[in-house]
Length: 111
Image (tube, rainbow, N blue to C red):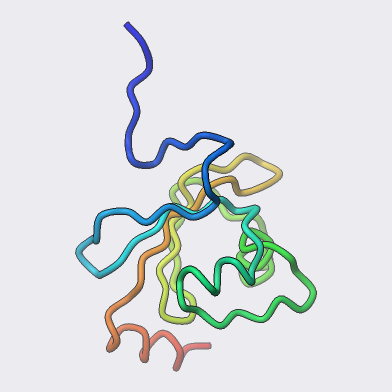
């Protein structure tokens, strides 16, 4: 029969960041956790510091203080992150969605 592919499947040779169809909240991207923070910032328009961590997966784990699990969702700096693929040792793929401006302001108040 063969494999069934969806928008969250990825090829190891593909770009680290893939723009997806806009979701209910706004623009969305499929992001490999090994994406460097500078590349993530350039593509998404965010301003995460890369001090102490090199990748977006490392930034997420550092923010949470633990390794997130598959299916876990959280908001950070105006973005919603959903862990699409992960194992016990690392995150592999994230779904990132830009939050509407009002939700982003409330999220930043909680930092």
